[in-house]
Figure 1 (spheres, rainbow, N blue to C red):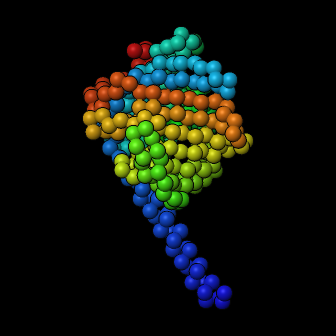
Figure 2: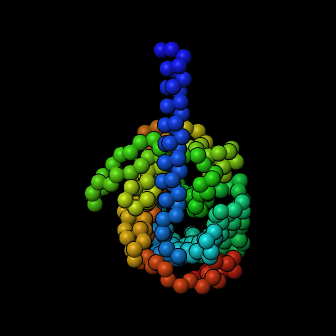
Figure 3: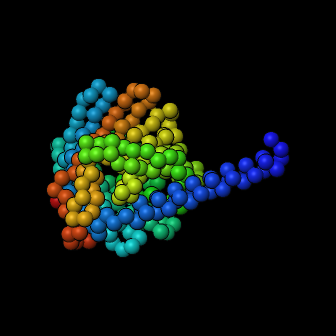
Amino acid sequence: MNKITLLALGVILATANVSAADEARSIMERADSRDDGSSLISTMQMILIDKNNKQRTRQMRTFSKDIDDNTEHKTIFFLSPSDVKNTAFLTYDYSGDDKDDDQWMYLPALKKTKRIPASDKDSAFMGSDFTYSDMTDKELDDYTFRLIKETVIKRKDGAHPVWVIESLPVSQAIIDETGYTKSDLYVRKDNYVLTRAKFYLKKSSRLKYMDVSKLEKIDGIWVAMQTTMTTKQGTQTLHKTILSNSDVEINQPIDSDMFTIRTIEKGL
């Protein structure tokens, strides 16, 4: 192959890569801007399953509300069992600026509210396979995206075409905060919902697999009714968390006082 042919091939490949990156970014922008309602209230069940298949179940009540175009507030109250009852979690999720998200956890045993620093956001949230970082939305500008392939995910409710997009953090700081060096994201073509993901952990050789196994449209809004996060090392399952939503209310008024440190310390 002569130099001219090699040069032409290089240009073609570079153009293809740029096109794949542009398309991936466009898909992620559509997914990010998807209408998820101005507020959401739900009852949530968290099932923790260890490697010996021993289960622990927790019940929660969750509230979230868009404060403005760039800010969302979320509160989670733990209702049972007794060892976590009255624990509460508060998040101020900022987007579109350089302000870091704020998170607090109220610990009733200590009668103290702890602020979650950025250095701890890759830690497990309440012993689950989700991290504190997973509890907030991601900034698109913190990642580069590349369209890997298109495939189909088969569910009980049918076959769903998806795009598979590789997501890479733009800096070590993002890796340190999230705990992920890379993610493969499966976005449904019909509704732009992130329905599956594979996360590569910076710690050891572990991987995490997220799967939205139940999705429902409520008052015109797609809601993940059941989501599983599984931590694996090779073929071995180390731990699994199943989150299930019920009693979902969309676009209902929520008093802003629900999203304060005073409220999480007082409880429901």
